[in-house]
Length: 263
Ligand SMILES: Nc1ncnc2c1ncn2[C@@H]1O[C@H](COP(=O)(O)OP(=O)(O)O)[C@@H](O)[C@H]1O
Ligand SMILES: [Mg+2]
Image (cartoon, rainbow, N blue to C red; front, top):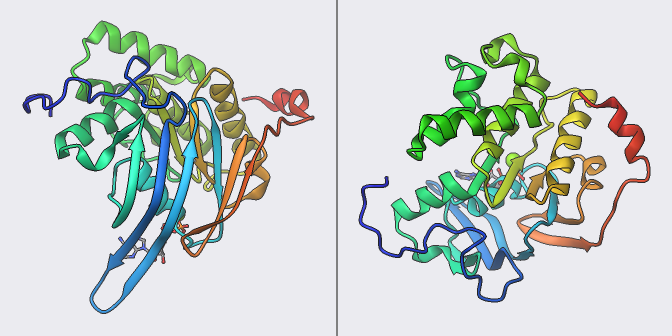
């Protein structure tokens, strides 16, 4: 990836990059996504407008099939919109070449999936290290980052374990470590508690909340409205449209109690 000719030196976005307005980290303008299959056109997204500020925690809720994963895939540069404009840190994403997109994805975006998506024949340590290896980071720096990330999620004591030797909750904590080890600009989570029982679900939510308080920008998809309260901005999708948009801090009153349940 890194061997392709640099088209723009500022293509890797980050704190030092020059945002156009200094406000929105993400700006979607009229984003539509149509999937064309044999005879059917599926309008998965139908004109989504959205702004996310740096450091914001956005929850995306809505029923199955309403376009949540499609929206997250577009935000994470895993898919492209059919119509509309996506500005990431002030830069139109559509202008990036394939290799630039891959680079932004690897360096600026951390993904957390419902099914954890850890690699079964790699250890906990190796799973967290892998995306850093793709970047060509030297091994001392990788080691420092991996151990710090595992410490953050309370999994330092399991570095040599394989995913199959961990509980679901532990696997998701490792997946969170993998997502944050690269110090991404944005953390995207697609129903991260979907495969967890409520105790582990709460624990993963508390972890995301902690990361948010440390400054992370988080966009989380959830079908469970209980979890949307952790966010300071939430939108509700229905049939590919934003039907509700609520902004405002919604700190939990019972935060200290929930903290105790910890990991
Ligand atoms: N690759 C695809 N090809 C065709 N249709 C798709 C594809 N991905 C998603 N869809 C359709 O787009 C709609 C939105 O899907 P999705 O974003 O996965 O919803 P959600 O995550 O909210 O459950 C659904 O009707 C789904 O069937
Ligand atoms: Mg989905």
